[in-house]
Length: 406
Image (cartoon, rainbow, N blue to C red; front, top):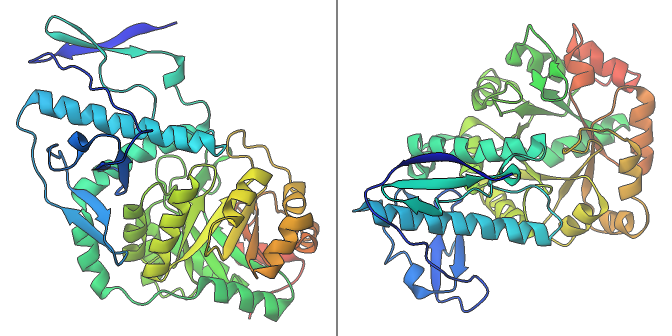
Protein backbone atom coordinates (compact mmCIF):
# COMPACT_ATOMS: atom_id res chain seq x y z
CA UNK A 1 0.00 0.00 0.00
CA UNK A 2 1.32 3.42 -0.89
CA UNK A 3 1.61 6.17 1.65
CA UNK A 4 3.23 9.50 2.28
CA UNK A 5 6.28 8.78 4.37
CA UNK A 6 8.40 11.92 4.31
CA UNK A 7 8.00 15.64 3.88
CA UNK A 8 9.77 18.91 4.54
CA UNK A 9 9.36 22.56 3.67
CA UNK A 10 10.65 23.90 0.37
CA UNK A 11 11.14 27.47 -0.76
CA UNK A 12 9.53 27.14 -4.16
CA UNK A 13 7.45 24.90 -6.37
CA UNK A 14 9.44 22.83 -8.88
CA UNK A 15 7.90 21.12 -11.87
CA UNK A 16 9.27 17.79 -13.03
CA UNK A 17 10.72 18.08 -16.55
CA UNK A 18 9.64 15.65 -19.25
CA UNK A 19 12.20 14.07 -21.54
CA UNK A 20 12.89 10.75 -23.26
CA UNK A 21 16.01 8.63 -23.53
CA UNK A 22 14.79 6.97 -26.72
CA UNK A 23 15.03 9.83 -29.21
CA UNK A 24 17.95 11.86 -30.54
CA UNK A 25 21.11 12.16 -28.47
CA UNK A 26 22.08 15.79 -28.83
CA UNK A 27 22.99 16.42 -25.21
CA UNK A 28 25.17 14.58 -22.73
CA UNK A 29 24.74 14.33 -18.99
CA UNK A 30 27.56 13.07 -16.81
CA UNK A 31 26.32 11.15 -13.81
CA UNK A 32 28.40 12.48 -10.88
CA UNK A 33 28.02 9.24 -8.93
CA UNK A 34 29.39 7.01 -11.71
CA UNK A 35 31.80 9.01 -13.79
CA UNK A 36 30.18 7.91 -17.07
CA UNK A 37 28.57 9.97 -19.79
CA UNK A 38 25.08 9.08 -20.93
CA UNK A 39 23.45 10.51 -24.03
CA UNK A 40 20.11 12.18 -23.46
CA UNK A 41 17.36 13.31 -25.72
CA UNK A 42 17.50 17.05 -25.31
CA UNK A 43 20.38 19.45 -25.74
CA UNK A 44 18.89 21.47 -22.91
CA UNK A 45 20.25 18.80 -20.55
CA UNK A 46 23.88 19.37 -21.48
CA UNK A 47 26.41 20.32 -18.84
CA UNK A 48 26.52 23.87 -20.12
CA UNK A 49 22.96 24.49 -19.00
CA UNK A 50 22.88 22.51 -15.77
CA UNK A 51 24.97 23.59 -12.76
CA UNK A 52 26.69 20.64 -11.08
CA UNK A 53 26.38 19.99 -7.36
CA UNK A 54 29.64 18.03 -7.13
CA UNK A 55 32.78 17.29 -9.10
CA UNK A 56 32.05 15.30 -12.24
CA UNK A 57 34.32 12.66 -13.75
CA UNK A 58 34.51 11.57 -17.38
CA UNK A 59 36.78 9.52 -19.61
CA UNK A 60 39.02 11.41 -22.02
CA UNK A 61 39.94 10.20 -25.50
CA UNK A 62 43.04 8.39 -24.24
CA UNK A 63 40.98 6.50 -21.65
CA UNK A 64 42.23 8.42 -18.64
CA UNK A 65 39.86 10.09 -16.23
CA UNK A 66 39.32 13.82 -16.02
CA UNK A 67 37.51 15.91 -13.47
CA UNK A 68 35.20 18.73 -14.50
CA UNK A 69 35.05 21.97 -12.50
CA UNK A 70 32.62 22.20 -9.63
CA UNK A 71 29.75 24.63 -10.05
CA UNK A 72 27.37 25.26 -7.21
CA UNK A 73 23.66 25.54 -7.91
CA UNK A 74 22.38 29.03 -7.42
CA UNK A 75 18.86 28.23 -6.28
CA UNK A 76 16.71 25.53 -4.76
CA UNK A 77 14.83 25.09 -8.02
CA UNK A 78 18.05 24.41 -9.94
CA UNK A 79 19.17 21.85 -7.36
CA UNK A 80 15.77 20.16 -7.57
CA UNK A 81 15.94 20.03 -11.36
CA UNK A 82 19.41 18.46 -11.29
CA UNK A 83 18.31 15.97 -8.64
CA UNK A 84 15.45 14.89 -10.86
CA UNK A 85 17.73 14.50 -13.87
CA UNK A 86 20.23 12.44 -11.89
CA UNK A 87 17.41 10.22 -10.68
CA UNK A 88 16.10 9.79 -14.23
CA UNK A 89 19.57 8.67 -15.32
CA UNK A 90 19.62 6.14 -12.48
CA UNK A 91 16.26 4.77 -13.56
CA UNK A 92 17.51 4.52 -17.15
CA UNK A 93 20.47 2.48 -15.88
CA UNK A 94 18.03 0.14 -14.13
CA UNK A 95 16.09 -0.29 -17.38
CA UNK A 96 19.25 -1.09 -19.36
CA UNK A 97 20.31 -3.61 -16.71
CA UNK A 98 16.88 -5.26 -16.69
CA UNK A 99 17.01 -5.66 -20.48
CA UNK A 100 20.15 -7.78 -19.99
CA UNK A 101 18.55 -10.00 -17.36
CA UNK A 102 20.03 -8.14 -14.39
CA UNK A 103 17.55 -8.20 -11.54
CA UNK A 104 19.58 -6.01 -9.17
CA UNK A 105 18.47 -2.38 -9.34
CA UNK A 106 21.29 0.13 -9.08
CA UNK A 107 19.25 2.60 -7.02
CA UNK A 108 15.87 2.51 -5.27
CA UNK A 109 12.91 3.57 -7.42
CA UNK A 110 12.02 6.35 -4.98
CA UNK A 111 13.11 9.51 -6.74
CA UNK A 112 12.74 13.25 -6.31
CA UNK A 113 9.52 14.45 -4.66
CA UNK A 114 6.56 14.19 -7.01
CA UNK A 115 3.87 15.95 -4.98
CA UNK A 116 3.70 19.40 -3.44
CA UNK A 117 1.11 20.81 -1.06
CA UNK A 118 1.74 24.43 -0.18
CA UNK A 119 5.24 24.78 1.27
CA UNK A 120 5.69 21.00 1.68
CA UNK A 121 7.04 18.36 -0.66
CA UNK A 122 5.98 14.74 -0.32
CA UNK A 123 7.67 11.55 -1.47
CA UNK A 124 5.60 8.46 -2.22
CA UNK A 125 6.88 5.21 -0.75
CA UNK A 126 5.84 1.66 -1.56
CA UNK A 127 7.11 -1.89 -1.34
CA UNK A 128 9.10 -1.46 -4.56
CA UNK A 129 11.46 0.85 -2.71
CA UNK A 130 12.59 -1.87 -0.31
CA UNK A 131 15.60 -4.00 -1.38
CA UNK A 132 14.37 -7.31 -2.74
CA UNK A 133 17.42 -9.26 -1.53
CA UNK A 134 20.71 -8.79 0.31
CA UNK A 135 22.71 -8.11 -2.87
CA UNK A 136 20.39 -5.28 -3.87
CA UNK A 137 20.61 -3.85 -0.35
CA UNK A 138 24.42 -3.95 -0.55
CA UNK A 139 24.44 -2.18 -3.92
CA UNK A 140 22.09 0.59 -2.76
CA UNK A 141 24.27 1.13 0.29
CA UNK A 142 27.42 1.07 -1.86
CA UNK A 143 26.07 3.81 -4.13
CA UNK A 144 25.62 6.12 -1.12
CA UNK A 145 28.92 5.07 0.45
CA UNK A 146 30.96 5.72 -2.69
CA UNK A 147 29.38 9.13 -3.21
CA UNK A 148 30.53 10.18 0.26
CA UNK A 149 34.03 8.75 -0.21
CA UNK A 150 34.45 10.60 -3.49
CA UNK A 151 33.76 13.90 -1.76
CA UNK A 152 36.59 13.19 0.70
CA UNK A 153 38.98 11.73 -1.87
CA UNK A 154 38.24 13.14 -5.33
CA UNK A 155 39.69 11.46 -8.37
CA UNK A 156 42.25 14.22 -8.83
CA UNK A 157 43.86 13.28 -5.49
CA UNK A 158 43.87 9.59 -6.39
CA UNK A 159 45.52 10.34 -9.73
CA UNK A 160 48.26 12.26 -7.94
CA UNK A 161 48.75 9.47 -5.38
CA UNK A 162 49.10 6.92 -8.18
CA UNK A 163 52.32 8.59 -9.30
CA UNK A 164 54.04 6.98 -6.29
CA UNK A 165 52.46 3.52 -6.17
CA UNK A 166 54.64 0.52 -7.07
CA UNK A 167 53.91 -1.57 -10.18
CA UNK A 168 51.12 -4.13 -9.97
CA UNK A 169 51.94 -7.82 -9.63
CA UNK A 170 50.88 -10.39 -12.22
CA UNK A 171 47.70 -11.86 -10.77
CA UNK A 172 46.82 -14.19 -13.67
CA UNK A 173 50.47 -15.18 -14.11
CA UNK A 174 50.71 -16.21 -10.44
CA UNK A 175 47.65 -18.47 -10.81
CA UNK A 176 49.02 -20.08 -13.97
CA UNK A 177 52.40 -20.70 -12.34
CA UNK A 178 50.79 -22.33 -9.29
CA UNK A 179 48.60 -24.53 -11.48
CA UNK A 180 51.64 -25.63 -13.47
CA UNK A 181 53.77 -26.23 -10.34
CA UNK A 182 51.24 -28.27 -8.33
CA UNK A 183 49.00 -29.78 -10.98
CA UNK A 184 46.11 -28.39 -8.93
CA UNK A 185 44.05 -25.21 -9.29
CA UNK A 186 45.92 -22.09 -8.23
CA UNK A 187 44.56 -20.87 -4.91
CA UNK A 188 43.14 -17.41 -4.28
CA UNK A 189 42.85 -17.46 -0.48
CA UNK A 190 40.34 -15.03 0.94
CA UNK A 191 41.03 -12.72 3.88
CA UNK A 192 37.49 -12.42 5.17
CA UNK A 193 36.21 -11.76 8.68
CA UNK A 194 32.47 -12.08 8.10
CA UNK A 195 29.69 -12.47 5.55
CA UNK A 196 25.95 -11.67 5.53
CA UNK A 197 25.06 -15.37 5.30
CA UNK A 198 27.52 -16.77 7.87
CA UNK A 199 28.10 -13.89 10.25
CA UNK A 200 31.53 -13.51 11.87
CA UNK A 201 33.85 -16.28 10.68
CA UNK A 202 36.82 -15.46 12.88
CA UNK A 203 36.79 -13.34 16.03
CA UNK A 204 40.60 -13.11 16.37
CA UNK A 205 40.92 -11.56 12.95
CA UNK A 206 44.35 -10.18 12.04
CA UNK A 207 44.41 -9.63 8.26
CA UNK A 208 48.20 -9.40 8.01
CA UNK A 209 48.87 -12.58 9.99
CA UNK A 210 46.20 -14.47 8.05
CA UNK A 211 47.70 -13.25 4.76
CA UNK A 212 51.16 -14.38 5.82
CA UNK A 213 49.82 -17.81 6.82
CA UNK A 214 48.10 -18.16 3.45
CA UNK A 215 51.25 -17.22 1.56
CA UNK A 216 53.33 -19.67 3.59
CA UNK A 217 50.72 -22.38 2.98
CA UNK A 218 50.98 -22.09 -0.81
CA UNK A 219 48.35 -19.55 -1.86
CA UNK A 220 49.12 -18.07 -5.28
CA UNK A 221 47.04 -14.93 -4.71
CA UNK A 222 44.94 -13.36 -1.97
CA UNK A 223 41.43 -11.95 -2.03
CA UNK A 224 40.87 -9.19 0.52
CA UNK A 225 37.37 -8.02 1.44
CA UNK A 226 37.01 -4.24 1.23
CA UNK A 227 33.32 -3.90 2.14
CA UNK A 228 32.98 -2.76 5.73
CA UNK A 229 29.24 -2.81 6.50
CA UNK A 230 28.39 -6.35 5.40
CA UNK A 231 31.76 -8.18 5.44
CA UNK A 232 33.68 -6.22 8.09
CA UNK A 233 36.50 -5.60 5.63
CA UNK A 234 38.28 -2.43 4.52
CA UNK A 235 40.61 -0.94 1.93
CA UNK A 236 42.99 -0.38 4.82
CA UNK A 237 43.34 -4.17 5.14
CA UNK A 238 44.56 -4.30 1.54
CA UNK A 239 47.03 -1.53 2.26
CA UNK A 240 48.26 -3.17 5.47
CA UNK A 241 48.85 -6.53 3.79
CA UNK A 242 50.73 -4.94 0.91
CA UNK A 243 52.88 -2.81 3.24
CA UNK A 244 53.66 -5.86 5.41
CA UNK A 245 55.71 -7.35 2.60
CA UNK A 246 53.31 -10.09 1.50
CA UNK A 247 54.32 -10.94 -2.06
CA UNK A 248 51.12 -12.61 -3.29
CA UNK A 249 49.12 -10.49 -5.77
CA UNK A 250 46.01 -9.04 -4.12
CA UNK A 251 42.43 -9.06 -5.38
CA UNK A 252 40.24 -6.24 -4.09
CA UNK A 253 37.00 -8.06 -3.21
CA UNK A 254 34.51 -5.22 -3.40
CA UNK A 255 31.16 -4.43 -4.99
CA UNK A 256 32.42 -2.24 -7.81
CA UNK A 257 29.83 0.05 -9.35
CA UNK A 258 32.03 2.77 -10.87
CA UNK A 259 35.56 3.58 -12.00
CA UNK A 260 36.48 5.67 -8.95
CA UNK A 261 36.59 2.52 -6.80
CA UNK A 262 39.14 0.96 -9.14
CA UNK A 263 41.50 3.93 -8.84
CA UNK A 264 41.07 3.86 -5.06
CA UNK A 265 41.86 0.14 -4.91
CA UNK A 266 44.97 0.67 -7.06
CA UNK A 267 46.24 3.34 -4.68
CA UNK A 268 45.67 1.00 -1.72
CA UNK A 269 47.77 -1.76 -3.29
CA UNK A 270 45.37 -3.97 -5.24
CA UNK A 271 46.61 -5.99 -8.23
CA UNK A 272 43.18 -7.22 -9.37
CA UNK A 273 39.54 -6.15 -9.19
CA UNK A 274 36.30 -8.12 -8.92
CA UNK A 275 33.48 -7.17 -11.32
CA UNK A 276 30.10 -8.86 -10.74
CA UNK A 277 27.95 -9.56 -13.81
CA UNK A 278 24.83 -9.84 -11.66
CA UNK A 279 25.21 -6.12 -10.92
CA UNK A 280 26.95 -4.56 -13.94
CA UNK A 281 25.53 -4.20 -17.47
CA UNK A 282 27.72 -5.21 -20.41
CA UNK A 283 28.83 -1.67 -21.24
CA UNK A 284 29.90 -1.10 -17.63
CA UNK A 285 31.91 -4.33 -17.58
CA UNK A 286 33.62 -3.40 -20.84
CA UNK A 287 34.38 0.13 -19.63
CA UNK A 288 35.65 -0.94 -16.21
CA UNK A 289 37.76 -3.72 -17.74
CA UNK A 290 39.47 -1.14 -19.94
CA UNK A 291 40.18 1.01 -16.88
CA UNK A 292 41.73 -2.03 -15.18
CA UNK A 293 43.97 -2.74 -18.18
CA UNK A 294 45.11 0.89 -18.29
CA UNK A 295 46.07 0.69 -14.60
CA UNK A 296 47.77 -2.70 -14.93
CA UNK A 297 45.08 -4.52 -12.93
CA UNK A 298 43.54 -7.92 -13.66
CA UNK A 299 39.75 -8.02 -13.83
CA UNK A 300 38.05 -11.11 -12.38
CA UNK A 301 34.54 -11.08 -13.84
CA UNK A 302 32.14 -13.14 -11.78
CA UNK A 303 29.14 -14.99 -13.24
CA UNK A 304 26.57 -17.35 -11.76
CA UNK A 305 24.30 -18.57 -14.55
CA UNK A 306 24.25 -19.29 -18.28
CA UNK A 307 22.96 -15.88 -19.31
CA UNK A 308 25.66 -14.06 -17.35
CA UNK A 309 28.32 -16.34 -18.83
CA UNK A 310 27.07 -15.66 -22.36
CA UNK A 311 27.05 -11.92 -21.72
CA UNK A 312 30.64 -11.95 -20.44
CA UNK A 313 31.90 -14.15 -23.28
CA UNK A 314 30.51 -11.51 -25.64
CA UNK A 315 32.74 -8.79 -24.13
CA UNK A 316 36.12 -8.18 -25.72
CA UNK A 317 39.28 -8.50 -23.66
CA UNK A 318 38.02 -10.84 -20.92
CA UNK A 319 40.89 -12.97 -19.51
CA UNK A 320 39.63 -14.15 -16.12
CA UNK A 321 36.13 -15.45 -15.29
CA UNK A 322 34.95 -16.56 -11.87
CA UNK A 323 32.03 -18.97 -11.59
CA UNK A 324 30.28 -18.42 -8.28
CA UNK A 325 28.43 -21.51 -7.08
CA UNK A 326 26.55 -19.27 -4.64
CA UNK A 327 23.47 -17.44 -5.84
CA UNK A 328 24.09 -13.91 -4.54
CA UNK A 329 20.37 -13.21 -4.27
CA UNK A 330 19.40 -16.31 -2.24
CA UNK A 331 22.87 -17.41 -0.97
CA UNK A 332 22.10 -21.00 -1.97
CA UNK A 333 25.19 -22.98 -3.03
CA UNK A 334 25.42 -25.66 -5.73
CA UNK A 335 28.90 -26.76 -6.84
CA UNK A 336 27.48 -28.45 -9.94
CA UNK A 337 26.94 -24.93 -11.24
CA UNK A 338 30.61 -24.78 -12.26
CA UNK A 339 30.36 -27.95 -14.35
CA UNK A 340 27.11 -26.83 -15.98
CA UNK A 341 28.57 -23.51 -17.14
CA UNK A 342 31.70 -25.12 -18.58
CA UNK A 343 29.97 -27.77 -20.67
CA UNK A 344 29.40 -27.65 -24.42
CA UNK A 345 30.08 -24.63 -26.58
CA UNK A 346 30.78 -22.32 -23.65
CA UNK A 347 33.61 -24.52 -22.43
CA UNK A 348 34.98 -24.86 -25.95
CA UNK A 349 34.99 -21.09 -26.45
CA UNK A 350 36.73 -20.55 -23.10
CA UNK A 351 39.47 -23.03 -24.02
CA UNK A 352 39.93 -21.48 -27.46
CA UNK A 353 40.39 -18.04 -25.94
CA UNK A 354 42.63 -19.37 -23.15
CA UNK A 355 40.42 -17.70 -20.53
CA UNK A 356 41.32 -18.75 -17.00
CA UNK A 357 38.29 -19.89 -14.99
CA UNK A 358 38.11 -19.58 -11.20
CA UNK A 359 35.78 -21.79 -9.16
CA UNK A 360 34.15 -19.97 -6.24
CA UNK A 361 32.08 -20.96 -3.17
CA UNK A 362 31.14 -24.29 -1.66
CA UNK A 363 34.69 -25.71 -1.73
CA UNK A 364 35.59 -27.45 1.54
CA UNK A 365 37.32 -30.75 0.73
CA UNK A 366 39.83 -32.31 -1.70
CA UNK A 367 36.86 -33.93 -3.47
CA UNK A 368 35.32 -30.51 -4.03
CA UNK A 369 38.58 -29.24 -5.53
CA UNK A 370 38.87 -32.32 -7.75
CA UNK A 371 35.27 -31.90 -8.93
CA UNK A 372 35.65 -28.33 -10.16
CA UNK A 373 39.12 -29.06 -11.59
CA UNK A 374 37.67 -31.88 -13.68
CA UNK A 375 34.99 -29.45 -14.85
CA UNK A 376 37.71 -27.19 -16.24
CA UNK A 377 38.78 -24.61 -13.65
CA UNK A 378 42.44 -23.68 -13.31
CA UNK A 379 42.04 -21.69 -10.07
CA UNK A 380 39.79 -21.58 -7.02
CA UNK A 381 38.80 -18.80 -4.64
CA UNK A 382 38.30 -20.10 -1.10
CA UNK A 383 37.60 -18.26 2.14
CA UNK A 384 35.36 -19.79 4.77
CA UNK A 385 36.84 -23.31 4.81
CA UNK A 386 40.38 -22.06 5.54
CA UNK A 387 40.02 -18.73 7.35
CA UNK A 388 38.19 -20.44 10.22
CA UNK A 389 41.13 -22.79 10.89
CA UNK A 390 43.43 -22.05 13.83
CA UNK A 391 46.30 -22.29 11.34
CA UNK A 392 45.01 -21.13 7.94
CA UNK A 393 48.19 -22.45 6.29
CA UNK A 394 47.44 -26.00 7.47
CA UNK A 395 43.84 -25.43 6.38
CA UNK A 396 45.12 -25.08 2.81
CA UNK A 397 46.85 -28.48 2.99
CA UNK A 398 43.65 -30.04 4.31
CA UNK A 399 41.61 -28.40 1.53
CA UNK A 400 43.84 -29.80 -1.27
CA UNK A 401 44.70 -33.08 0.44
CA UNK A 402 48.42 -32.33 0.21
CA UNK A 403 50.99 -29.70 1.04
CA UNK A 404 51.14 -27.20 -1.83
CA UNK A 405 53.56 -24.77 -0.20
CA UNK A 406 56.85 -23.94 -1.91
